[in-house]
Length: 131
Image (cartoon, rainbow, N blue to C red; front, top):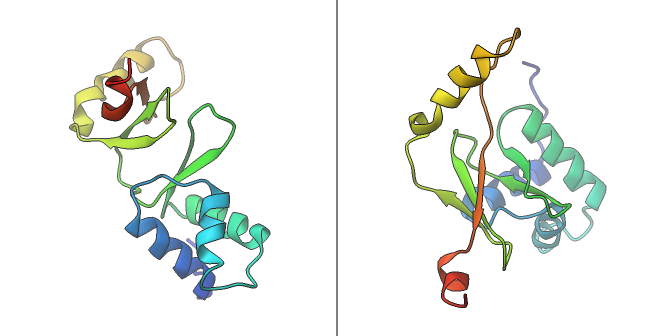
């Protein structure tokens, strides 16, 4: 893996993602990073986010709302998206609990399935009470 030159902006993005559980969009990250680095561009934020994803430092995923979300926790885990308020939550479940999906997928596929990405949908605790 190629060694990256140190970047204060990239470190600020990593620190922001490490301290939030919100699974922010690039625009949200940009607005927060601008408080410390007012001259940072949205393009710089996008480039650094994509680089961090490529390096395996963060996760990028789509919830189906047209915006990519970013997660500073790059360890394998599952997400839940509320269909009413669009909040994204980490689900506290054993990652091995769904690994059998890889075996099922491999059974009918000539290639090799190495992993999967699963997002659960429904209503969060706050929105569930509104139903």
